[in-house]
Length: 332
Image 1 (cartoon, rainbow, N blue to C red):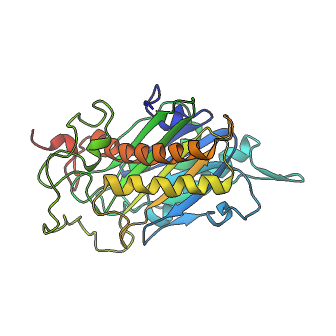
Image 2: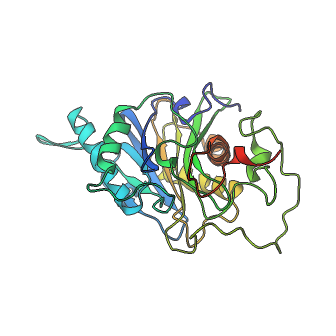
Image 3: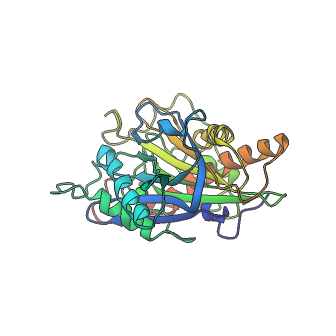
């Protein structure tokens, strides 16, 4: 399998991504959507998640498709980004219909970026407007690094960001991932520039440094993220998608498999202080896969997510007042 033409989640047929952010706020919103409802599920491994409308994604719930998935900064305030996305979708006539009523289905997850130096003294919650703007910007191409939900993200040692990656499987099925990286853990090995996910890198998509060049020393203290001990101050939130036809149970299995990508790219991962969460999505533009093909789709999802996380940190660029350096600031 090889990366898709864009090496973005939008290589998955039917998927579009829109983003909006505010440089003064140092926060933003990322929306994953499609031109038709798509199957979705969610899997949570972190100890401090922040979510909206995720219960309906369980395989036994009534709703079979969603209209968009939202990743947002702003902690609990950012959950209101979904309200702006709903307004935009409703204006387009999109949503769950019951008689004359239209209710867009928009699950959301948030990360904590309230301590990153941005101006958080707002008079009105900015996230609904950011959500609607992100939806309006949805398309095939989007920025990586300090953009959207990753605009103010941080890891233990470096500024984080939005990353994305994709694979095209031998049978033509596409798999992609997008992640907002705001982790308690670190994306790079101690004392260097090499990424934990380096063994999975395609070409030089996050520096071309190759596999990690040192053995992990379990006796070495973990890096301490500023204010990281505050519960809920960290999170990697992500969407993994495929154009294969999967039902909600199959999409849940996709999201579960993709969680391995977080563990491969961040050390430590899935901590009690993180809200690590993966949405799964399937547009159904290609045939239902065989059991053997499902194994490869799940494997590709985990690899894409690991690569997306590293790309998000790699692509972040410095701004005045950053509390942490960016990867590009590291010597060498």
